[in-house]
Length: 305
Ligand code: GLU
Ligand code: ZN
Image (cartoon, rainbow, N blue to C red; front, top):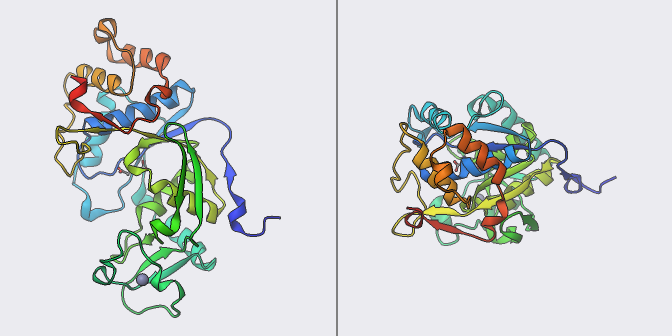
């Protein structure tokens, strides 16, 4: 018998199931296309399933119409997913249940600290409210008690990773404004959807130990991870919706898809350049080798022209 819930972590097994999980905060750009493509090819090359999940649990950050635009872009680029799209807004009951479970295990606690009080400590939360008793009457956030563990995982691209959760701090699982936090929702849904493999940008690598800590606390499976280099603009910043990366064109996708293939290390040549979209993807699936990106952290978009 495991001594506590932390020993319940289950390694994944069985059929490869990957996913692409965009937030509908704007249309897809070239950076998100490369991440989607790598995750898609990794799944298809393993004869696995590839799912799409729309992470729409943060209405203040969302842009109306983005979900439809994102799905349309994926279709336009030939990245067809399996099954139905899962929308996180339909999963609130599941998140609530998991939050209750964490509270019952004393692994989640209310935090009433204000931004101002935390200013000198952030981004790492020093655990001030861990030992407070009584449920505060004011609106409050709920944090996960990481118990200052040290977590290690092996990333398929970036190698062995060690994180001290004390340095990352107890993170928020339920926000003061009444919304569930990304870390909680993503962990619950990766388990719910039976995800075996997560292929996403390296900008999210700090989230992985938090998600693994939650998986361990909840007795979930731990997927395999591969954190991809991110595409950067001429200023060296990651292409993102915040820094106004151009939306993907929805007409004539071939040249952009070709560039995305080059970005993730595929040896494209003129022969591939002249092929149809579905032949391009078929070719890419046959040539896919994640190891080409080993240890890479950034890819300047300008290097792909
Ligand atoms: N929804 C997150 C984002 O768009 C990504 C989630 C993930 O891949 O884990 O940044
Ligand atoms: Zn606090």
